[in-house]
Amino acid sequence: KAGVTQTPRYLIKTRGQQVTLSCSPISGHRSVSWYQQTPGQGLQFLFEYFSETQRNKGNFPGRFSGRQFSNSRSEMNVSTLELGDSALYLCASSLSRGSTDTQYFGPGTRLTVL
Amino acid sequence: AQSVTQLGSHVSVSEGALVLLRCNYSSSVPPYLFWYVQYPNQGLQLLLKYTSAATLVKGINGFEAEFKKSETSFHLTKPSAHMSDAAEYFCAVTTMGGGGGSNYKLTFGKGTLLTVNP
Image (cartoon, rainbow over all chains, first blue to last red; front, side):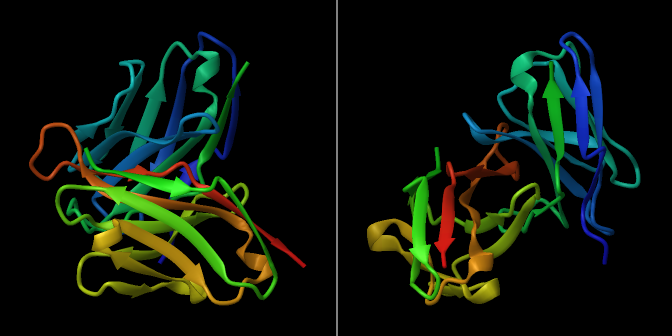
């Protein structure tokens, strides 16, 4: 079974631009979560989508948004990019939303904001 | 709020030596705990998870972890380190997200970088 895929793997943008990242979950997985990883803050939860609805949200500004499609694929959008948005963005999928459900991670998208 | 603390941001061992990576949790209820590994330029891979079925949990690549309630710990061990074990390791706990109900999320520790010397 194919793992979680994320595109693109690398992205360079300038301040003020917007960016869209894509995530395809493992086949059959319905929950998709997004995380931001930076050297200073570590791994931080952005949001989770399930059945095309945002179910859970971390402590990030409204510039960070996302959506999920009927096939469970998810996109994350960041508008008005800031230098501090440079990070590795990881997507994870799980079968469902239980507390013990394992989250399987993709390879991430490395975003650099200049 | 539930959280995990990883003691030691960097651990260095010799090939063949014991690997011990420390993780302590703070939780008022039984937690669900995970260990993930991240190799350079890759995502996170699950090593093992504790879901209260057994206190000693065996994972992939020869790793195991023991849940100790009295010490609020979930340390990761491997009897003999291999060069391929060099990576960053993250301990994580399932925490309740906003809105309660079934809004769970993973909360990660800061990570421990494992270096294996030949």
